[in-house]
Image 1 (cartoon, rainbow, N blue to C red):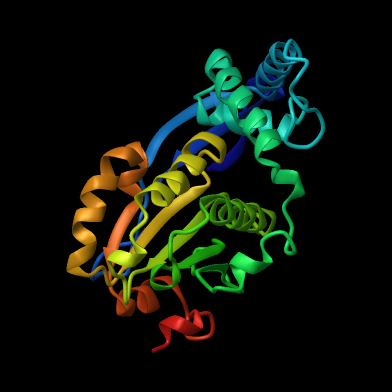
Image 2: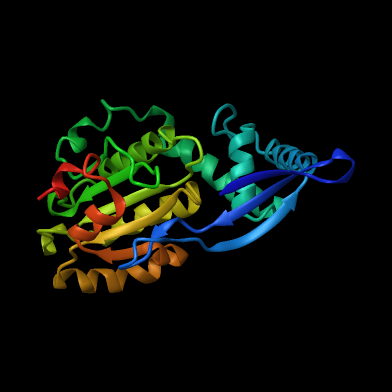
Length: 263
């Protein structure tokens, strides 16, 4: 999402919201592709008016938390408004569910300590470096995932998403997710968790998932993907199947390549 502040006659400022698809490398060429989905001119005063309108409607729900990521969080409200193309009713509906979920799931209580045992398996982690487009990188090593306690896996997933968002550099608004499928077997298959991952982004962290790389997918993964794909809604279009070599060449520099992709 890019924001351009342009001057109109009589010095009235207009905020231009340009929604773009992730800046991705083209296959074989290395050039990036820019796809403009829509461009909406929105006066800052009108934007503020919509935020206040949403906030007023949310105030009717006394059981919704306040504070950061609550019903009075202007930044969160604006983000969901943009996601819902500035439809107040749609934004209120989605925000109500998201805020309630955050409270019930206990997002604010998640910490390094609370996910320590699951994180130590090495099945998922946040890479220390950004990709070449400045995005935080969430890596899942599927061969280390053995479905046991869904809630513990979900806690680690949400904690890493929150951590990635907190690390956004200026101008970055989404995450690159890499699912390393080397060594994947039937014992690692977990359609329920894969669906949870995409649902979390779709309902509670809209527009935060920029791209998903399925790396070196073996033949045995195909039936898993065919079952999961219909459940992923529009987010299925963010998926790219690729090789380790493509990950190294197109998404990282020599200095920033994750250790597991150097071999």
